[in-house]
Length: 325
Image (cartoon, rainbow, N blue to C red; front, side, top):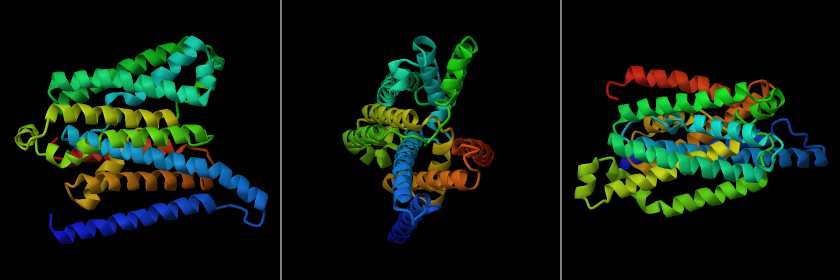
């Protein structure tokens, strides 16, 4: 990639960063009564945690989705297609079904977050590591198994909800839809620390992504421990998705949208730029979308609905326009 293209991408990233700041400022300030100090302080207290949660979610999902695509060498696959969202809904439904909506795990936000992250991380890592090993990273088999797992987790979750007490089910529904309302500030701090730790531990593996995309044989010839890097990166992807999902709920197709938009805009194989671009696109989509939801639709429709519908259409577009899967 020549120097001109690198500089052009840097300008694009700077423009995206400026757009993120603009969206964040608009989200914080639109509709705020500046003449009343108490109302202004109250609005900032409510909006600031929600904004931070959206930025964290975009960073986690954007980076994890792009890394996942590079690891399995396919740009139309995201972790949500492997059943992680269905696993999240199953875990929450099982907790309420077994322990009840009034249990400590269900009512304590910090404890619920910890249980979600641990269970999703352990279960997904064990299952998907085995799948990748058995299928030898064949994307068609991975998608097929992921579809089966999604149906399997969904069937169990549906069965539990059918025999669940209606009052318990009403309580459960609020946790099964992505929401940025009433975010716990302690969860935000824990999420930031956990994501920072994941990035620190995997910093050397992330630096090798450009080499890993050349293929297993080429990477090994260049002295890379390919299998070890792949396992560590997949574990990191799973944990990042688990953190984002446990914090705000499942947001299907967000990773697919922002990762591919980043590739189409930047047109580079440098993962430092692609990951940053994907995260910035995610921040624009979430913050801008939430701004529209709150001030145009008056909370009538959650932002996750628009992302799911738009992502599904975008996925079909990618399938129909890509000659090589």
